[in-house]
Image 1: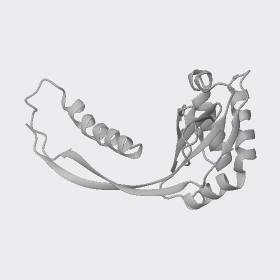
Image 2: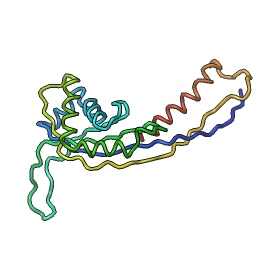
Image 3: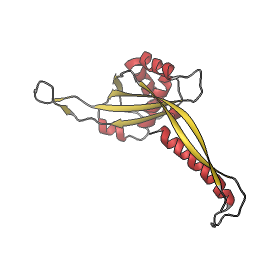
Image 4: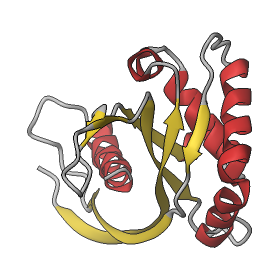
Length: 186
């Protein structure tokens, strides 16, 4: 079997992470409509100056009732959707930074984000659902260093397994790329 050495590498991943509350006619209908998640991501991307592939969105329906702190009976909040989002900032970018993305989201506010999401929904041919951004707290910036370990063959000795040496050479870098991608979305 070929001897291998471990080469350590690391990547700095910066994300802008936030939530917003959307007002919709039916949370269940909204979250189960095909393409809605992508349209919300595209709307956030448009408002923040990023590409839709840089934005990951999670949509959920909150409980429809809430106890008030004073102990009063529960009241109906209406049909809302919690939209959590993560925007990955391109590594090494000097023009797109976490601060510029955060500023763009804050500047867009509820009206700007409502317009961007509605435009993205129309572009995705999603009709009959009116969405309005109800609340947009300022997002947070999270930076992490992801350490990767890759294996590089140091000899050309014939492998003992039935796999080709080409497959072995490409499997280790692929595993490192997958580990980096999974860590970026963790």
